[in-house]
Amino acid sequence: MDDATLVMVLLAAGTYALKAAGPLVLGGRSQLAGWLERLALLLPAPLLMALVATSTLVADGRWVVDARLAGLAAAAVALWRRANFVVVVLVAAATTAVVRLVV
Amino acid sequence: MTEADPDNRSERTRVRRQAIFIALSAAPFGVTFGIAAVEAGLSVAQAMGFSVLVFAGSAQFAAVSVLGDGGTVAAAVIAGLLLNLRSLAFGVALAPALRGTWPWRALVSQLMIDESTAVGTAQSTKSLRRYGYLAAGVAVFVVWNASTLLGAAVLSSSGDLVENLGLDAAIPAVFLALVWPRLADPTQRRLAVAGAAVALLLSPFIAAGIPILASAGVVVLARGELRG
Picture 1 (spheres, rainbow over the protein chains, first blue to last red):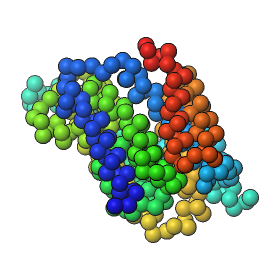
Picture 2: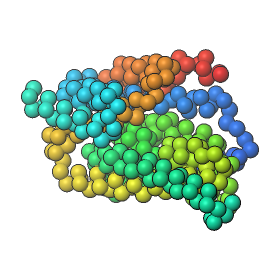
Picture 3: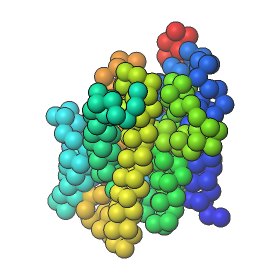
Picture 4: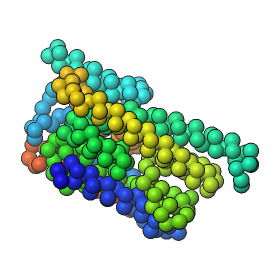
């Protein structure tokens, strides 16, 4: 089994356990501990922003500034202007492509 | 409360419209996932496996991104699971509306995602919450998988296209779009900046993927809020 398949199987199993714990095991009677609920709410922000940073500024374990940064800046402007998801992604890709052509 | 009840029927139509609207807005996101998965070296079948079996947008993107950067299996899985911890909270919140036989609950649990939770919990009665959860869950499942297939199949044949069209910049843009609504909250904004800083500083020194996991550690900055 290659790495991608292994990740798929393990992530699917773990994710299903998290999804089904409420309906299957805990039922409607119990309540999640307050701290756990707040932890679940707070975790995505640092994780997602870490992914933004590393997928823009890191390549092969090194810091790199390249056309992707221009694409990300354009995406940020699009989001700030309340553009929808399609526009945000297209603006990021187009900006990156243009900067690659020019620089 | 029967199907013949006109109020109930119009309410259900309204809920169904919400479900379809939210599912359609997931389509571009699914296409991007298909592209990102193939770009990270996955086959079309593996990309589909993620969308059918994992069925959790941000976690799928995170795991595939870590894999594409050469991260370990463990790092990719744990990054995805940390993002999905919220499904546990969703499940507990929705459990009262999802009563039924054991196999039925096992089946509908797979639909526990942001969209089905949002549509479900927004309704005023328990039966409408159940209906909204199922309608949005099924609609997103269909659209998500069809759009993943489209993205993966179209891109799997054309490798160079990815860099030439700047599609590799789509990945950070997706993560930014996902985190964006959370940045309105000062605590989450602080955690986001700290998490990015931790991941960037560690990236040259430890294996890909681990800096992402380390970024989760910055939640200790909000320990006051965690205690409540």
